[in-house]
Every structure is written in C-alpha cells, then in structure tokens.
Amino acid sequence: MSKRYNTLNEELRREFGGKVMKLSLDGGFTCPNRDGKVGTKGCIFCSEEGSGEFAGSRLVSLEEQVKEQKKLLSKKWDTDKYIIYFQNFTNTYGTIEKLKRLYYDAIDIEGVVGLAIATRPDCLGEETLELLSKLNKETYLWVELGLQTIHEKSARFIRRGYPLFIYDEAIKNLKDRNIKVVTHIILGLPDESKEEMLDTVKYVGNTNTWGIKLHSLYIQRDTDLFDYYMKNPFSIMSREEYIVLVADAIELLPKDMVIHRVTGDGKKELLYEPKWTLDKLRVLSMLDKELKLRNSHQGKNKIENF
Image (tube, rainbow, N blue to C red; front, side, top):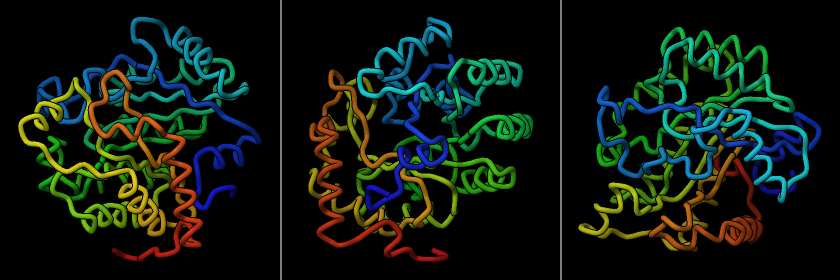
C-alpha cells in the first residue's frame, strides 16, 4: 500500500492488475426527495444536477457518455478498463425494467469491468435487491449509500428524508447478498462537533462494509444550502482543521475498509465555500504528511462495537 490508508485506486489495481478508470454517467433518474414521494426540494446541499456536476449528459446515450468521459479522463490515465458509475440523483429509483436495461447495457459496453451505483437506502426494494444480487454474480459491483450523518438533528437540517434504521436495514440487506457497500459521510455539517462527526465515522466503520467516502461540506451557489448560508452564516472548517479531522477518521476505520474519497470535488464555477477544496492535490499531500508526522495509519485507533 503506497499510502497509509487503503485507497480505491490500490484496491482496483489489486483486483484487475492495473489502472481502472471510473466513468461518471447520468442514468436519467430523479429522486424521491424531489418528486414528492419523500420531499420536493431535495437534500439541502444537492445541486440542480443532483450532485453530478462531473457526470455525462443524460441527453445522449450511455455509449456517447462513455466516449465523452474517456476523452475527458484519458489525458490523466491510459487504461482500457472502466467502471461505470451512475452518480447523480437516485440510481435505483425506477421501474425494475428500466434498471435491468440500464445496468446490463452499461456492463455490455466494451472495456467495462464493473458497475458502481449511487442511491438512497430507502430505494432498495426486494425486486431491486434481487436484481443487484444477480448483477453482483456477473460483474464487479458496489452500491453507494448517502448517509452523511448518524445524528438526527443534522439529518433533519439537510432534509435527508429517512431515519437511521433505514440505513441499517439497507446495509443488512446488501451484506446478506454479498454486495459491496460504500457509505458517504459529510464532515463539517453546521452545529456538529468534532466528536459527533467522528461518531458517524465510528458507526460506519463498525458496519464492516466494503468502503467509505469522506468529504467536507461545500456550498454551491445553485443549492438551498447557499441561500441558508447567506442568511445564517456558520463556521466552515479550514483546510488545516479538515486534514486533522480526516486523519483522526482514518485512524478509526477498519484496516481493510476501502477509502474511496477523502476530499470532495466542487465545481469551480459554482463553489462558494470552502475554496481550499479546489486544490485537491494539496489536500491529499497534506493528509499524507499529517499521517506520516503522526507515524499513523488506517485502523490505528479502531474501536470495536461502537
């Protein structure tokens, strides 16, 4: 392991013997937190593009989106192995016929070795779980769940739209089918203490699921969070504070959990705060330095049965 934590890049290299490129596509979905089933405004931080600013365009076919994404990312990496990532909105929120067609069309594309599906824990009905179970036997699959926090006050603030036990049930249902699970956590939600943020990390760590994504709260101009912040400014973590917090989080996670992300990607034209997130390489470099200074690593302070 070249870093002091278990990265997705290294995990995929071990699995496939080389670099695997993740291609973010738009599957043409909406969200129950937008269409009225759960809510109409979405999560407070969610953008007009469903937090998929870097995904392909739903106006073209999957094949065209793949071509566009390959062209965009081939400047960084040279590989012929790809994972399709259905990223924005809720990618299990549709008829079973649509899901089956979309997922199988995706894995049939040349060079595709796996599939990543971002969704909500409350959008995993029995039929969908059975489809995912079947798919899991045919390709390299993981499902991403947007938890963000275990704290009810924060869940209400961000308008998540489901209680914590729904997440717990989703985890159990996916694990029972041996489907890899990745949980999203936001660090820096208003009025959450450092201890509360790390409690969320511990909680997810003790699910013993496959992966986790960590990123700071960022405020984009096309979100309700931006409007809230303009009227009710709250403290935003500095880069230095964030680095220390993420290092603490990494120490608490199981050694074998795959850390997919340690910092978020805001769109430059839309990002209001924190501006430091735009320099992703510096954040990663500072995190490496912090862990080295501590002589620390992932799992150093793992606490069982939180």
